[in-house]
View (cartoon, rainbow, N blue to C red):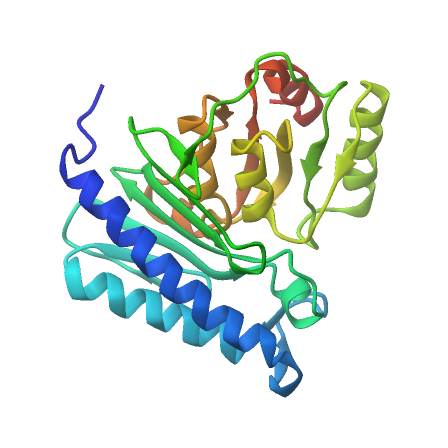
Length: 266
């Protein structure tokens, strides 16, 4: 097994938690005065962005650079800045901007860290719920400091699966994946934030999460959390420019892996 940062990972985890708390507080401040925000749309009218997304990302980037100036940073709003180390921070300042601007609490700040393409740190802050999820490779996963360990007895038939979809995926494909899940005896939820639903997989609230097309900044932190809680994730391609493209995302508790792989065609 490759050495992915060793002792330095603990320091990076602590730093990521500190940044997530500060970024979460800034995002929450914007959320509490969201009526004043100018909301813009991206390539799809359902895909929105506001000054809050940009300011929170700027905050995270500046805090990372203060301590780790040689690391790369990939963020949803400002793209990829390559670094000279083997580390790349992968951040979504506000995952769930649609719930955010519409006054729903299902959004989060997601901070992941890759080493040689492998998720080695994952921190997700859900300020409305006063929750901080944190994990580092080989160090386990926690929610507000409490260790997370997945239950092997839970599967798609006795627990709930999270699903996600967007306009990169054809409606008929989404309908089919829902149909496949229901036919297999499962049920689903979608709360508007893929990153938060991945955190819920790590916490045992959801037994799995599947999205046919998702970006790295939405899933890398959650992937680390799920793995460290004892779950599985489908590898995300990180070679070359693939890190900046979308890919299929699947994470599952042990008892749901086979069923969800089949549903996802993996």
